[in-house]
Image (cartoon, rainbow, N blue to C red; front, top):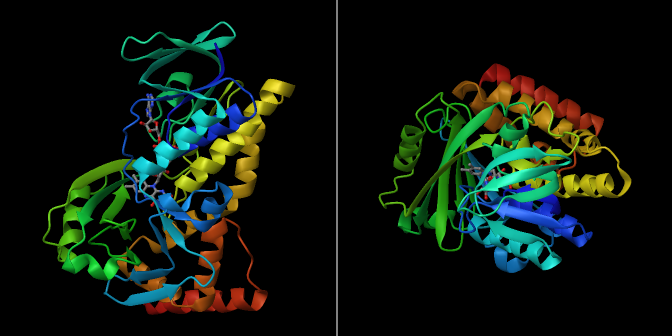
Length: 378
Ligand SMILES: Cc1cc2nc3c(=O)[nH]c(=O)nc-3n(C[C@H](O)[C@H](O)[C@H](O)COP(=O)(O)OP(=O)(O)OC[C@H]3O[C@@H](n4cnc5c(N)ncnc54)[C@H](O)[C@@H]3O)c2cc1C
């Protein structure tokens, strides 16, 4: 019998397991496949690398240069003066985080969770491979966008899902210029309601696009992107998964919580989820520790998360709702990105997830530029 069972060994689950085990709570982390390769661009902000002390060996690239391409092909180049986007490979990253949890004292079990049933004051977790059921007093659902935990425990649904696809290509002549650059494409032919990305790693480049679930033909969009980039090589890996970009109506119960994608904690507009997965895993684990030691309600986890990050979710949702609707609006958006103050605000909030209000005069200038480009259409 464990105090806490965590279902899902991605970044959210692994971080939660580390924090709990470190505090002396008996913890089991259940992951369906320890060789799982989560479909993911693997872009992480500097703030995450610092907070979770991610070793250099896992950060394949530290990219401070970025370019953005508009629907008409206008290119904007930017450089982060005080930071970078780190590029990790999820198979290595997730495995490292699980090892950390194990070193702190968590048990790691490789099995698919088939069902979770209340058993008196605790839960009984049925596993695949004829493994014996695991009993635990508390549950953390960290099992991603299609969370089985959420379904079994009756949490409200995950809404607003984007489906994203990515292909990995080995470096070739066409891809050489992208070796040290993050490139984002706003182009209705590549994505009518999200964006396309080019993320370089040490020995390959990940190229992908996303669109609202069940709205457009994702494979066709990806094919067009690759054609537009004039890549003739065959990818060595195709991967796709949903991205839940809206927090569930609630993600806490009396004895269970959801973290990361299972809770819907991916920001709209940019689809960033690794930071929020790890942050929610950590915050959720701390609330669990207080629940176990002092009977404090788990709701404090959800309240604190919403208080800290709702402004970011709200702002990015507004941005997506206004600018991602048509190529004309995307053209205006890229034009606005040319402004140095806009770039500075974007980088500051991306790197450390803090909304730093710009001086009033800068806010006014950006507001007027917004109006100008929206009216002009580019
Ligand atoms: C194509 C794509 C590109 C992306 N690019 C980026 C990016 O560049 N940067 C970024 O920040 N975010 C990106 N994201 C989002 C990011 O991948 C997720 O937000 C992040 O992985 C969430 O972590 P998690 O631990 O909550 O869930 P996951 O990483 O999904 O982990 C869930 C784990 O649970 C396991 N599991 C599921 N069901 C069960 C079960 N029944 N029993 C046992 N185990 C189970 C799975 O095997 C998996 O290991 C991208 C997403 C996609 C789809």
